[in-house]
Structure formats: structure tokens, C-alpha cells
Image 1 (tube, helix red, strand yellow):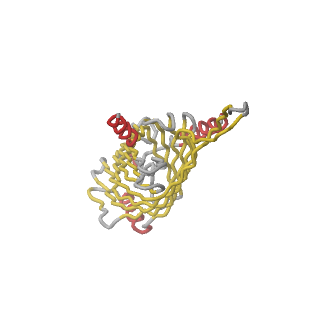
Image 2 (image 1 turned 90 degrees about the vertical axis):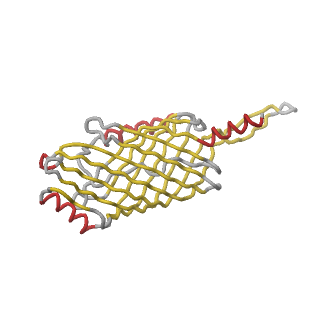
Image 3 (image 1 turned 180 degrees about the vertical axis):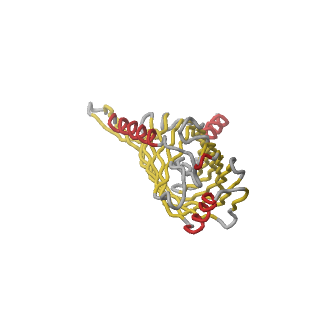
Amino acid sequence: MKLIKFNLYLFVSILFFSSCGSASHHFYATDEGNLLALREEKDLKVSAGYTPHINSLPGNNINAQVGYSPFKNLGLHGSYFRIRNSFTGAEDIDKNVYQYNFSGAIGGYYFMPAKAKEVFDDEEGGLTSFESPTDGKGLLFDAYIGFSQGAVNNFYFGETGKIELDFQKVYVQGGFHIFLDKVGASFTLRGAQLNYLDSSTATGKLSASQLRKVEIIEENNPFFFLESALKISVGKPAAPIRGYLTLAGVYDFGDVFLEVQPSTMQFGVTADVDYFFSKKKSKKRK
């Protein structure tokens, strides 16, 4: 158990420092994916995260999620993601980047609760052992298909121009989650197709190189790539509220075709809404 915890701390430390790269440009940034880890029927969870922009860390983003399991092994997810950064970009031109997107997903999950062995003395002086599920601990596997729609705007103040790109994304995501005593970890991998829509526009005074970026996007549209996310949560597995840190990354774009923000980071909390509802029902029964 101690070895597993040590490996989790080491892994998140490596990803944290590797995510501290430049966030000086992007025409796309990834959200954290579906990470609410639904485990049972009627499970209802919400999460909210925010990360300020500090030095070169990829921040100033907001992520909110809601997940619900209407039936056993069926999960529904919805999320909102927003990121906003300002910096000096290429050619020493001050620029603001603003992106938002809404997502929805449906999929399935399978939870394997950890079991603890209890030993009791029987009437004849012998020992009898029983295995019972522990409270919230165990392994969870899930898979989702999803759809996302949003826009990213690049505002160039040096030449008072704007590039506005509307996009849609479809994806397939697989996830693995582990819940220990006071810490949990989730890892997800998504295969995605990103499609920029015909409604995308470039307005104002833009340089030839900036306009060429839009042309390259149109010539190579749509884009296929991988995204991954690692989430470390802190708190008892069955606790109604848990804190978390999420690191998400984009892979296999290539600088030739599309500029992306390579990673995003979130600090936030997850709440089990059904826990509070069950508490209210139990009080009414009393």
C-alpha cells in the first residue's frame, strides 16, 4: 500500500513540473475530461475547479462537471470548460486567448470494491472469517463517448485583429480509477476528432503569418489526436466532499498544423450530491 501511494505522489510530481511549459499561444486547449468516477446506481456527483495563471503555469481556467448514474453501470456526464490567458506572442504582439466549450457524454462503468477480512470467535472456540466490501475503496473502470462544442478567440492588440474559431469535438474515452484510504487516482485516455467549423472568422488588421495560420487550419481540418488526464483526489473514499488536482495534456498535434496549449491544470472539489439527499431522507424517517 505504501509503495502504491509513493508511486502516485512521484507520478503527479513529474507531471506537475512537466506541465509548467509555455502557455503563450493556442488555438485549442484540452479540458480535464469525464473524471467524476460514478460507481453505483443513482450516484450523483458535481465538481468545480479553478486555477489562476501563475508565471508560466497553464492556468486561469475554470472547469465544472456533473455526473449521474440513472441505472447501474450507466453514466451520464456534462461539463463546462473555460480558459483565458494574456501574453506576448509571436512577433512581440500582445495577445489574449479565450476559449470555452460545453461537453456531454454517455458510457458505462464497472466498480470492483476492495474487501476486508474480519475474523470472529465462534461458539466452539474456533475462528470464523468473513470478507465484506470496504466503504468506497476499490477499482473502477469506465468508458464514454462524448461530444463537445465551443470556440477559441485570439485577440491581437498590436494590430487590433481577431481570429475566432468555432469547433466541435467527438471522442472516445477510457478510464481507470483507484480509491485507497485517504487518496485516490484516476487516469483517462481519449481519442478525439477536432473539427473547426465554417463559421470561423479572421477580422481586423492581421499580419500575413497570422492569416496563414488560419489557412493551415482550414487545409488540414479535421484533426485527430490523443488527450490524457491524471487526477489525484484527497479525502476518504466515501467522504461527501473531496479535494483534487487534475493535469490534462494534448498529444500528436504537431506544430506544423495547429498551435495548442500543451497542458492544463485544475484545483477543485468534488461533492457527492446523493450523499446529502440520503442524509435528509434518513432524518425524515426518524
